Image 1 (cartoon, rainbow, N blue to C red):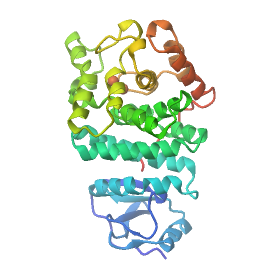
Image 2 (tube, rainbow, N blue to C red):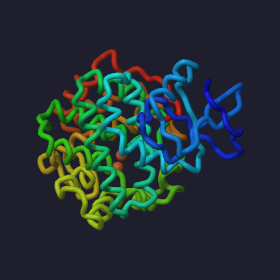
Image 3 (cartoon, rainbow, N blue to C red):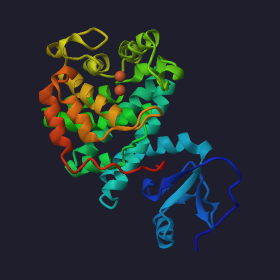
Length: 332
Ligand SMILES: [Fe+2]
Ligand SMILES: [Fe+2]
């Protein structure tokens, strides 16, 4: 029988997947289960999580557990440490792996945005990019599974994770295949908008058109991003390029330096395309998401200033039947 302890008191609880827990480890957070609509303590932090414990839960049909909101950062660190193992575990379904990877990434990016010049956060991001690369190397199905769980409600965090995943998958089609290059592209893509951490929430979430003054501030985020990253000097110099250049366009119509495609690095051309695609296909407070194909059609015209060869590869990557929007739940 599952041993039930004291009733959970108050506080906000976070749901987690059973698969995200590693066997025979002492967890540094309490685990709760839902029983008749009530959350009850199932296992306190100091007890090891064993195969038997897991089987008991499976036996009861439990695959979702809960942790207290105050343990969120402990759980986040636990996940980041165990992520390589979770992703390599053949017993965990790929879609579940995609969900765990996605939610771990989103929470990490939240930490990065709240303290972007903290070197430790950038180091954590680098490790996470490596996990994302090894996940995506499992093949096209892995990418499609990640695509299925991406959030279609826009937040700067999910946007950063989406842009990283799309960029890595697109990069693979364009010769970005060595471990070194994938890492350079992945970390640049994940942190491409980190400069927005200096833009006020009011401007970032404004539902109407930005005033010229507000737009001028917004246009500073690529440079601010590079400044922030230079402060920590954790990532390769070449990864600064997609951060700086992802809003540049052909004919010098972009910002901040109005350079054209010829001067843009391949990483920047990739991030420019997936950044625009993700922004247009996800729902923001003030904008309804457009259909993926409509977006690609709009993007695929010369006047939008993207590299059309790179864009063509992106269209092939997404394929006709893979752009299925499925809602995602807030779960680890
Ligand atoms: Fe941006
Ligand atoms: Fe962006």
